[in-house]
Image (cartoon, rainbow over all chains, first blue to last red; front, top):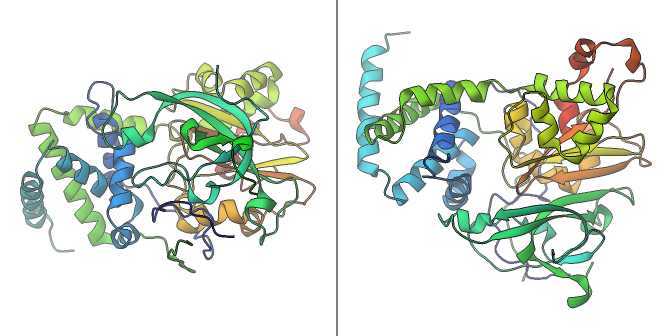
Length: 113
Length: 100
Length: 207
């Protein structure tokens, strides 16, 4: 029996077939904690700049390829920056400029391994 | 006075909405039983687009019989799937056509 | 009209490599810098928020369970209003509501979030990577008994399996059954036996 259930997001995977569940234990890295910390602060009672549902809308809208290619916390980071740019809280240029200086500092300070 | 009480049979509607919704595809158009009332909450569909002043909606816990949801899989007859459904996505069974 | 969607039989968990992690660190630090320059947050707040995120963990869930096993009145309060009962133990809870689902000799509970990764983070900390995997999210609702078997738990058909999909505002904790020799342990001993797998529902027997 087929019935129209409406649009289905690529994140809406309940009931799909899938293989074995990967049991690897991953550490929670500092940058990942920082993503969550910033999201929580921006969504708190004093700010209400970006909510968890807006972040979810962010990763539900970036397209299935990007969604499937990014790790969980990287999705959250990308979704949060997309929503902040969308809402005019910051511009893509400002962020790119800060990332470029960050990369340059990293190159300067990282010695050979 | 909430629209539904524990024990009511309800059908999950397929509202045809695009964008951020929290009702997974696998329960849409399915019939379940209300097993709990969670209170009122802001609608995530509003929050996702920055509307924080919208009307709060009733949230219910609805149980579905697993053998009916997934007839091709192995489930015990009494196994259940319980999920939270916001009021606008529910209709009383009596108002809808018969469906599993 | 049937909806055609993408099936992946063996979907690997996406893990950043070293370059990916460095890149992500640079991006989040840059984001923080821009937000600070706009007066939207301070570095101190971020540091304090990270410390708060790091403090919850399985030990807090174990504390709640051990208390429920040894204090029947507490257990009733926990089943009635999980958030309030957890907070009684000086565990701060940020989720709107916590629902504690009790395992019995004839019922077993399993928690999942098919849409993303909802989990009682302010109590238990971050969920394990497998909980966030597509394979767990897809299969935990459709074939939970097979999923449990993959975790080494063969649940008899006489035991009812309730799967809870945390798709909205509630967050869930499983209250496992106590060990048969409950009285022989003090709280520290009991707490040490309770694992994250018990609290999510992929393990059943404690002790």
